[in-house]
Amino acid sequence: MTGSVLYEAPGPRARRRARHASVVTALLLLGVLGWVIHCFAAEGELTYEKWGALIDPTNENFGPLWTLLGGGLANTLLAAGWAILLSLVIGTVLALTRITAAAWYRWAVVGVIELLRGTPVVVLIFFSAQALPALGLNVSLMWALVIGLTAYNCVIIAEIVRAGVTALPVGQSEAAYAVGMRRHQVLLHVLLPQAFRAMLPALISQLVVVLKDTSLGVTISYAEFVQRGEIAIENLDNQIQVYLALGVVFILINYTLSRIAVHTERALSRGRSAAGEPESAAATGD
Picture 1 (cartoon, rainbow, N blue to C red):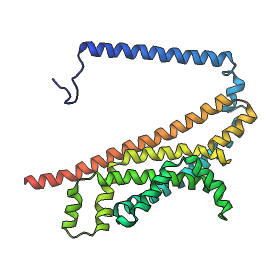
Picture 2: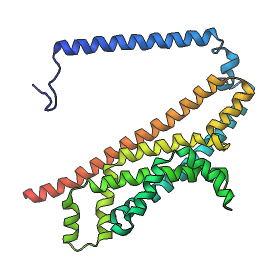
Picture 3: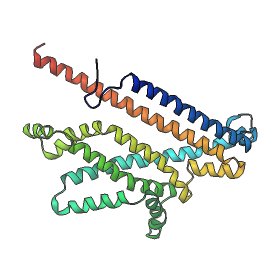
Picture 4: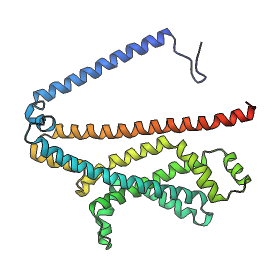
């Protein structure tokens, strides 16, 4: 008989109640979905005129629409790629700086992190697009979006990495110091790789947030995916259909990133297990 040390395993009655609750919840969700579909049909949102440009390759608007959306998606991925790369690099540097900072200037590092973390990302994007040109730094709309996203997400990643490093057992760094490694070597070669592996799910989740936040580029008229979708809506008058299509694309991309994170984590776990087996065999004399 197996059970949990944290809670008592559910008995037959509890399992039966859980099944009944699941069935009732599923029926309610199906009912809500059916009601939504009925409302869409009553409002004429399920007609071919509304969906043809999105799903029918023979429709005259199908090619131009997906060409327009494809260009916006490429711009979104470009901005997200740069923001992710810069956020990871700058965030890691900030984390290491905060860990190794002396007391007399640590307050400055912490102040910058807390300031950027407490500022809404849309404000940072607006600042990049409006204030930087006023200061004589002329940047394109794409780089204004990248700078705003990087400024916000790099400090989040810095805190994730710092939490991963500080959560490691003290024995890891003590063993490294014992074999003559210097502080920067301990951080770069011992602690940081382990912290990245331990915090990989949280890092991937934040990278997904970066990708989703690129849609805020519409506020500065950057030609990203959502902004191109709004142009399509103005011409085709099918707002619900286009937004549903945009949502599905975002879900597929984010789901793909999540699955990559899961497979990466499993691969790293298998690698650690495989590396530990020979050591165990040698220690036992096998």
